[in-house]
Amino acid sequence: MSFLAEVILVGELVTLEPLSAEHHEGLVEAVRDGNLWDLWYTSIPGPQEMHAEIDRRVGLRDAGTMLPFTLRRDDTGRIVGMTTFMNVDAANRHVEIGSTWTARSQQRTGTNTESKLLLLTHR
Image 1 (cartoon, rainbow, N blue to C red):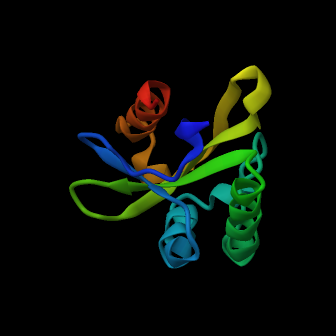
Image 2: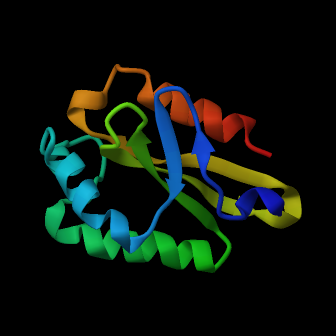
């Protein structure tokens, strides 16, 4: 499925970059913005788990069941979160959008909305 090829998706507020180990420090900084791992209603990796989470998502990408992205603000270049195409079922042309989190300071700024729009309009 061509939409599972690694690609950079550029919006007006945020750019989605293929997740890689190079994003580790920026993702740790983003997850610390709001202590997101302490949220009771979702599961977000803490700073100590970020390497493992990146490895997990990249492994699922390599298996063809996920396409993970890092969210980067266009105006500052700062990494602000993660999102994915997940639970890919290529035979039935089915994919879900999820496993998304954004730094507390970025919530309600439009970055999450735009990242979803970029994913929904990607072919």
